[in-house]
Image (cartoon, rainbow, N blue to C red; front, side, top):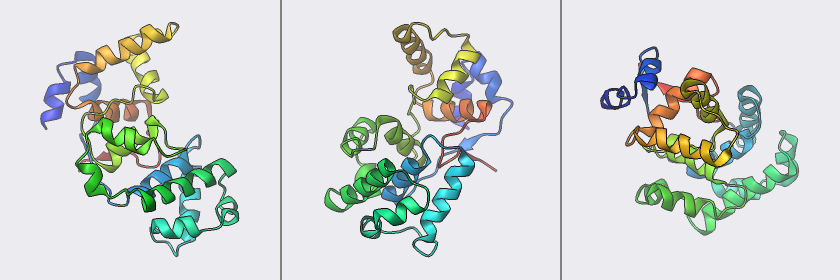
Length: 209
């Protein structure tokens, strides 16, 4: 795979990758559902997040709901599956935005990474990290670097012996190192997450068989 050859130029990352199976990126059509699932999973373990997501789908007979159905679901019903008041509000915000502004995957596919981030972070409850995860796991973008992801930061601290004492310098170091991974920074993130065993929910990296 082309990305493996490119990332192997980084000797430290290349050694790590050589001990793992390759990854491939997928795409999702129901962007509003992905964002809702991402919001629901934040600050939760994968196991708990999966349980809540399953309860959410059960509200709609086990299928992915339309944005209109999510918006019409009473707050009490969403709280009953384990969502906080804030997350209930954010989930409704996503559904409302999808209905009023549009969230079709074909429309987003025509946007640059930064345009997607700028567009979706207009939704209260959707931050840059959530939009970056969507770019990776929902739109299959190959060159996204989640600089603010704690798992990525911890992995790079360990792999490159970085010091996070000075936040500005630390961030510059992360960006400097990741720059040489372009145009395959998403794959680098996948391998770093897998190495640290802290893949972001709700969409874990998929191994290529």
